[in-house]
Amino acid sequence: MSTRYEIPDRPRRNRRAPWLRALVAEHHLQVSDLIWPLFVQEGENLATPVPGLPGVERLTIDKLVDAAKEAAALGIPAIALFPVVPTEKKNDAASEAFNTQNLVCRAMRAVKTAVPEIGLIGDVALDPYTTHGHDGVLDANGDVANDPTIAILCEQALALAQAGCDMVAPSDMMDGRIGLIRAALDRAGYEQVAILSYAAKYASAFYGPFRQAVGSNKAAPLCKRGYQMDPANTREAMREVALDVAEGADMVMVKPGILYLDIVARVAEQCELPVFAYHVSGEYAMLKAASAQGMLDERAAMLETLLAFKRAGADAILTYAARDVARWLTADS
View (cartoon, one colour):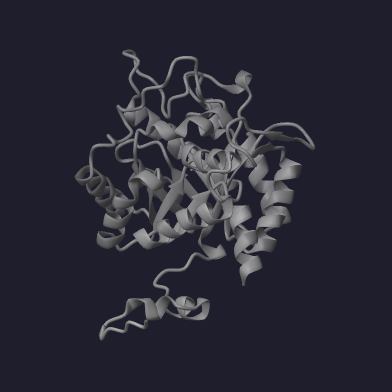
């Protein structure tokens, strides 16, 4: 027996075929949305797997150059470099951070020579360079000292710019650092170097695998709540973003991503600058672990996750899955 009703509005009509779904899709994930974070280590011809981050490796400079070439060939517009600093080069003053011949500066020069078309993003923070693993230097009370840290961050940004960095990315969350870094870069003739501000970086439990990758994790858990944001707060994020915009940031970052898509959406709605989001190590690791257990389809879950970033309003996404996602999107095109 056939039953037909007079239903004037049938939204399923627009979902009935792949070509139609493609035509009416409101948001799209593209290779040009991706930034690939890469870890660089000392040595030659080494690619060392990072525990807890399947598919991610610490690369020596020669291997890093190969990865940059692959990224460019896939259409990934930029890579973000994070150094694995040898223990003997760490100290309480983070002096290696502004050594113009340090690991990340040498890596940037090598990549710029071999792959000049790829964008280079350099992390501006002291945690890879300090013995204690904090993002700044400590005062006599053991607290991260805001203004002395900024002085070092400015020198670090200048060293990165001199090495060929296209975009410095202060991830430290010190007050006032964007304006002072901008002024230092401009005075030195690096006015074309952009600043990607980690404007809303939360004190998250999802950074663990990253800290292990760069060697900034310690036996005792680091408490960074004195400078990174409280996960309970939304309005504070908007204040932080507004301050960084006023100080001269070129784009702003929300970190982490998945758990903070409400912040991404609010920043994207209210901020006129491009908004980036970081699909952080713990978020990536969860998807990889669930996929390895057969609980998720990795490709489908990763693409859906990153599309959610775009739907929330992110203009670009830092993700350890960038290479795989670029391959999948290219295969689908």
